[in-house]
Image (cartoon, rainbow, N blue to C red; front, side, top):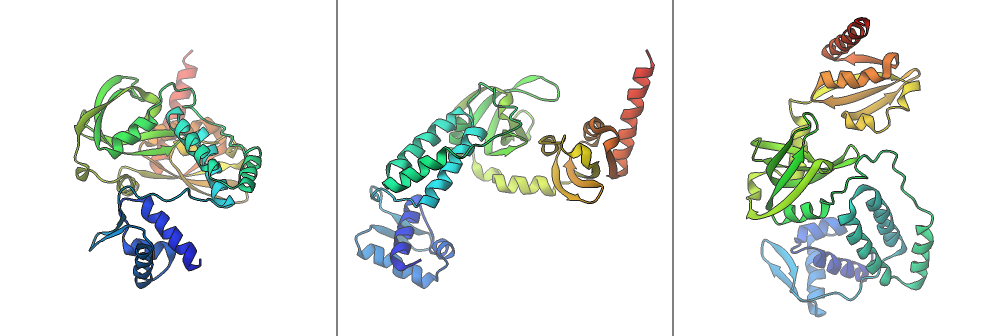
Length: 317
């Protein structure tokens, strides 16, 4: 990257965040701190109002704006893919904003690049085989994003999965996760006095309170995920699936804690992390003689118990 392009990229980076440190810019553009200082000075001398604060970084004076940003074909194509994915993996509250942003991006493209993106649009589709939340009428994703950023508590009218009970929860939201073909809210639940995972499709109502909570009292969403991964509540299970049944697992394996797989001549060896071996054993029964448990021994025991109960039940009449 030549210096002119780098100066423009640095200016764009400065406007993308409230405050940017010199080390952050050095890491992003693979340059030395001395080069960062020279480039920032060059921007300042050219009339860009860069404000530097010792020990905290750089910021652009409020009110200063760049002229319309020019995107390359590759950048515009990447944003197009993002829009296609947004159609499948977000709800309507986010889709409309994403499409609005995409129209603005297309408006600043050069004519050849507009034609390129329009042509590419007709040749890309995202097909999802399993979207259990696609018919959910709730559109809470955008509202929850705002509550998380502004550190506001939310009230949930929530239907649990296990007991099918409906409860009202006061929650301090720390982040959103997408897994198992669904969006989940992670937050501190005042009713349970612990962190809980709330699936958006089970939310029957949502109210954002004006009351703020202290974000320093909670881990970040990344820290929460690491705690879950390293937590003692997760149990490892190694299972061998015959190749003839693997195609039937589809997205169900992700819902049951799939981690990794290794294929050999006769079967596929899969690793799972689960919090409930009994429940996991029930899922394995779906695949009958096409599955074998390698470990742990407790999982084999639960599997046999389920089989014996099933035989006793059907022999009784």
